[in-house]
Length: 145
Image (cartoon, rainbow, N blue to C red; front, side, top):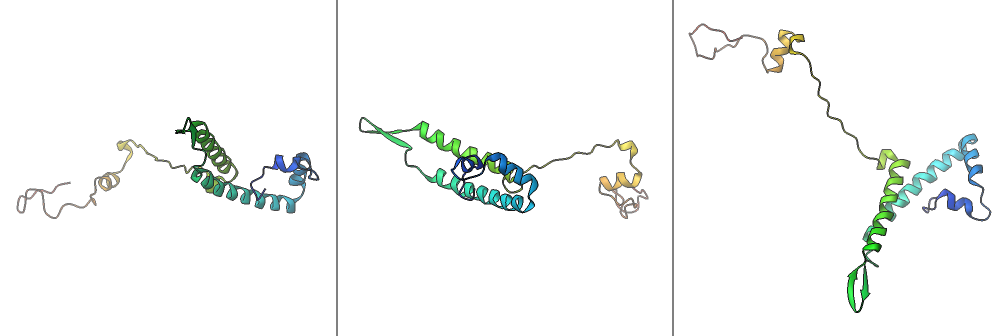
């Protein structure tokens, strides 16, 4: 698994246990389960490096037809599929590192009639104290509330 090979492929190899045996061991053996999880994390890291290699490999992107260089869209689409499949698996097997980041904007609506005078004044940026200088200037005797 640390070399990117799937559990299915490993279990098909001669001398290897069946998938059913592996699943029983995962259920019943804590030490095996921990080692398996470490191998899975290493497998995901392998795929991350493999994605870069696939994306950077331009060999096969062009074919020669009648002496002309032509884009091989099938090859490019296959490379994209290989990258996307690995990214999807990585996001499921190690979502903390490779999963989509979820953000939430929350708007809380309250009826202004439920707020106290102090809360309303804080919303509009006022302390609730009378202005030391009324809006009309000195001497007019009005206090803006």
